[in-house]
Amino acid sequence: MNNKNNILEQGATIGIIGAGQLGKMLALSAYQLGFKVAIFCPDKDGPAFDVTPLQFIASYDDKDSLKNFANHCDIITYEFENLPLNSIKFLEKIKPLAPSSFALSITQDRLKEKQFLASKNIKVAKYQRIENLTDLQKAKDNIGLPLVLKTTRMGYDGKGQRIIREEREIEKYFNQLSGSVLIAEQFIPFVREISIIIARNKRGQVREYDVSENLHENHILKTSIVPANISPLSAKKATRIAHEIVGALDYVGVMGIEFFVVNQDGDEILIVNEIAPRVHNSGHWTKAVCAINQFEQHIRAIANWPLGDPTRFADVRMENLLGKEIIDAHKKLQSGTNADFYGKTEIRSGRKMGHLNHIQFAKNNI
Ligand code: AMP
Image (cartoon, rainbow, N blue to C red):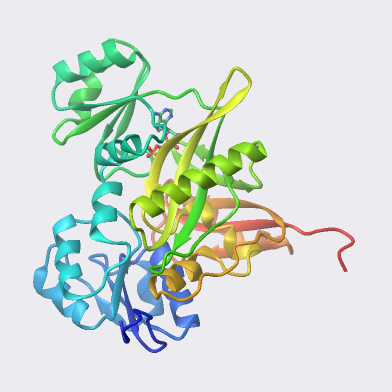
């Protein structure tokens, strides 16, 4: 930070850990606001390296390289949560870091996250810590089947999780995931999944975007639709919960919060599934239909600049381009479709290669 008000000045260097598409879009927003960007990632092919000359390619455990990176930065942020906590704490001792290592410690661990939410009286699926097969048998008795068995850390896009529907699957799936601490969750019979993107800066200003409705394919986000098909009351509830979470974590930056919506006797009940301490795939629609999108908002938040107005000025449907869907996508663009292609060189099945925002332009709006 360059002055006593903790406001990052133009020309300062923002360090981003992770060189994926989120890092790339964050970097572009940072440049737009007059910053420089340094990126740290072990994968030299990360698409974010396309947009900055300040590149640090090393393992996330390499303390010398982390220190060298930190020395080039005025503030450090990250594009994903599956990072070694020790390395993040190490960086935080050298330079300001946002979101904090405390926020990361809670949100990178499914068990800690659920304990934190429950302590704030925020609804989560019933859960149990699993260290051995006996624990899992007990969870089956206490919670019932189906159960979702997940690794507490390093899971994303459905990786590191199994749905146990029958008694005979218990041992098989336990053996497949054991080796790290696990969590067993009640299977939630949701009617839809929604998320909210919220930002908070260091001076405590908070802004949230409209709730989006999310459709997954093979546990990977495929489509986000805004507005979500939920009641105004549920939208208010999601907003209130999101404010509580960022306040309780003294959070700085953009956060994505995913919810299950359950229909109970005609009422919509919201259950928090997951918190992401970063910009989120289900917030990519903000690039097309908000004056200040989630990436710019994150940079403004960590720089302690005034946050932008999150108002949405059109309905929109975000479509992820997974794997081979990226091939020739540019040839099929509709005129009202806004595209982001991430420039990843290797196509893999289910890999996020780009996204489209299909904007529903208001008619007769001349
Ligand atoms: P996650 O990695 O926890 O976000 O899970 C990925 C997807 O798996 C979610 O978006 C849901 O579609 C599904 N899922 C995860 N946990 C549960 C649960 N407890 N009950 C029902 N579906 C779940």
